[in-house]
Image (cartoon, rainbow, N blue to C red; front, side, top):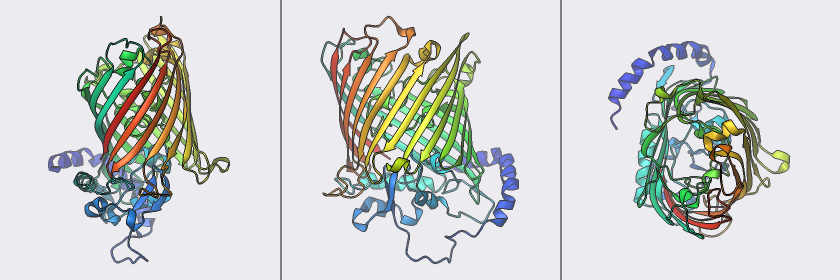
Length: 511
């Protein structure tokens, strides 16, 4: 990867910001203690590889659980552990960021990100580790190569999450509205944050956040069709279906300050990357596959539009986020053309985080409110998003989302009210067997209920239901297989009181 030209350009563009960063951090840098990992410092033992159970239960990997692909691709002292959105990053993982890159006050393209508060760290930092333990095949060249690339790009500040793979969806039941029962597709999603600079102590930093998506059906056009079209449903059973070919959904400039307590962003935003996260209900590529479990369908969360984002976490137990963006954006068009005060959405989210809620283990509850402007009409929407571990030392968790929108806000997504809830059993075989401790398998069960917006009526059914059961199996250190079965009842545009069964199998590479 040739970074010389962008490096020169970015350094010029960042000169003013660099002066501000130097001035505001000079006193802090002078008073900060020497880094623990300075050259010549001694430690009781060499660094160890870390792992987490999908964001929970951080631990040192036993020697017999370390994949040879990880050992060949990256030494333990360079590891930055993979994050999980919706979970406060454990202290042991955040401490991996506390590495000194140079003696200068400003570090350009740092190999470690600026400081972030624990919940914000899980949102804006990806880490540089894609190798996961507990796979059926513990080493393969593809995983080793992916980890080598990821590690080297992290050395120049580029951290990312690249998920891609094949999906098959089949529908049984009454005659589909769209006439098609089988769907095969390849989809990809690349989220990347390039850290341009940070102060030596990490208290401030500058980065570019991007998202590139690609997807199209092998035997159909995702832009105009898919299983939801054949079912006549509000729900989309295949959240990994990106649709629309290739497009950029997020290109924005981010700034972190005050030791990572504050993050500001401006640019083209996919706000679903930041708001309405849930560690047990993330959908897409490695969880329940129905899009209803990816985000609250009743909330008009801006996607791919020009806007502004702010996140503030003053203490570990509380954070506040907000986004303000246009709501009429068309994919692969200039977002500046869609800046219009009469097509705008504002949304706020307040989250309360507990390390041990009533003795049950970690839990987070989020409250959301959105107000919209479409033409001459104002709308509003409300949401609640809760995740809770069910037992202090349990690997079983519960999630729940509830959302409601008035007619004007509901017209944006076509959904007036939405309820989703379910259980996720992480690492179900962790105690015994060949996969042992902290494997990344999971079993998930979800239920959904949707009602359509007035803007899409008349409809055949005013209440649409769904149940989903999924099992994710780690096959290689970077590849999973997921069989999935869904039952949909009363699709809003279906043939009467339909009950359809949707079977899917998805394989995904997580790089």
